[in-house]
Image (cartoon, rainbow, N blue to C red):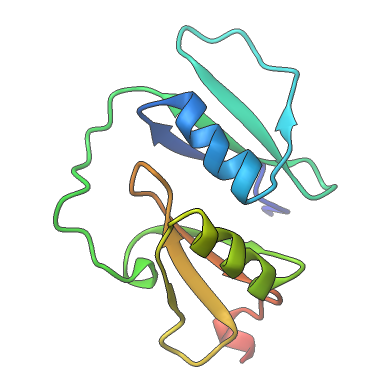
Length: 130
């Protein structure tokens, strides 16, 4: 039986630019212990259960063109945050667009500098339990 998600990986073009988004704006801490891979990247620590986001500087086989404007209609990772509106303000101040959940939930979606979609909410109840 699967117990949790260990990490989600995102392909990025520029690790420094991505770290400004993930570490500075989203305030996800960088894990300083990076395995020695044959490509550049970074590990970011999510919460206290060992879950991570892995940024990988590798060629992206997927076009960012033609993706849905609303990230909820695209593949995405959903993250639970402490203060949704504070994050919305940080994203707005940094010039990142986002769209509120179409379901009416207190959630929104945005894209990172490489077009990867991310969902943010303060509480996540699986759809089967709503």
